Image 1 (cartoon, rainbow, N blue to C red):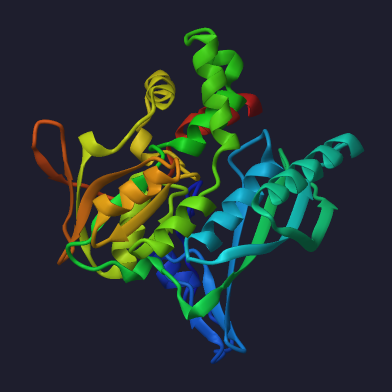
Image 2: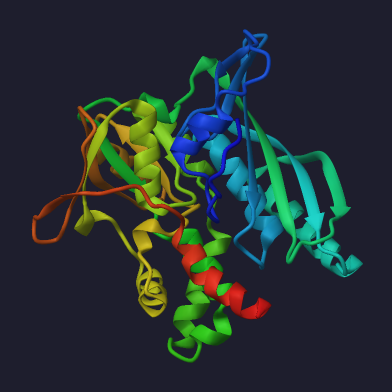
Length: 342
């Protein structure tokens, strides 16, 4: 029986993943402890007593610093499980006409990010692929969790406080400032755009995850496509819980707010690699522990029994929210890409 629906641009929705992707696991291995699920970004294997954490991610929504972003995004998923990243396997798909200098630049970015985290490039695949409008970089990151301790996003408990590191729309702010700098420069100050571009150089959550793992985290989740709201839904789905978050408590940087206002998009639904969601019994204590390491974090709400997902606005009004259908980055990109093709 065929499936007639067309997939929208961006992340495949959870109901489609459950229907068409997750039933196809291949062979079941006893070494595999954590398997694919909605909101679960990494697999975990037990190999002779050490836990090996594996995760893969592509970079498709950025045109600058794609190699650098890809390594950090992949390693973030591994770190969010409580593992220390060890190595990356990289697949590069390059459009026709790519120069040797462009390939060299991407590989230098990959090496730079890998050195920052302390991981080794283990290999991969590089090819020129017909029909691509821009390079696609896919990274599989591998990490090691010692002592048998992991922190899957399914581990949240009712009443756990929700901690968010950095601020909403982190990666998206850097991407939009870099890719649409000329357009934004006509409306926003140059120093604001320069600061916004630098966000992409600070998207690692490895340090945050190490601290959280040692200071009371029950579950962790890297915030990627769909932004903070998307990650909240993924974490709640994985844990079988609801949530209540306070919109006024969710930090949004001035640079993010200005760029989102220009494009008419929601910072809470904008791709946010560089942010980490943590479920902890003592979220305030975790915030203090992170601050002691020079890391910013905020308690933005708590997980609740049941399935209600509630956003409380600045006036105290409560409303049920739905998961993002796609990331706000695509709302910016799609009309501009259509314009280029006309």
